[in-house]
Length: 233
Image (cartoon, rainbow, N blue to C red; front, side, top):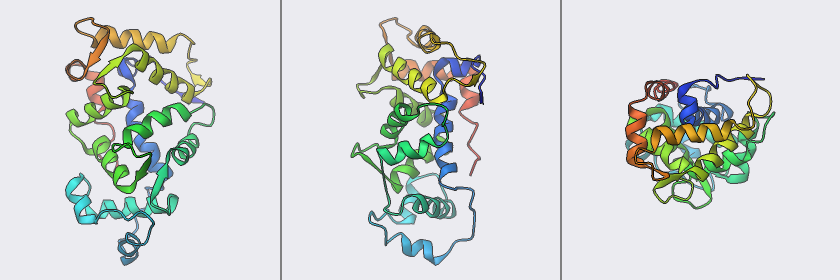
């Protein structure tokens, strides 16, 4: 049973904690806790998988991870993804392992699209690293932009109530019916209404990136949640 504090203002606002947990869940399923020493094998295997990642020094420059951290990430990634590529079905299967009491497929679809920044239908090691770099080490602006992009499903620069409701329903579907306290059927819509009351400053029915950023930065609970996993690695 999931023990969720559904009364948390930050969670009620837009579930930013779950967004960050999403990246963390993928870390766990890839066995990230294996912090064994560097080896020449890691360097060699970077060149032998079907999809060859960029050189570690280039990824180190582009991301906020050290070379050691990238080697550990890669070792774990290749264990689960020997080909070097994760498609959406694979991603859903991995993610579903952590939510057996619910249906995580829709939320995993939205999350996959957020990681798949070039929209080619697959996630490479580089995609994975750059997404986690933002989630775990990014600035407040970078994290908030990433979150906005997740909720802006059609990528038109606005979050609508319909998009927000799709996301919230997918979160509740993922958590299943065995949360504590129990989740009511009308809860997703209630959260959407609270979200728009707080975020939609000019009451035009959509939330822009500026409205999203400004509101989040003045919400203490959201700001606290943004720092939860910064030192997980």
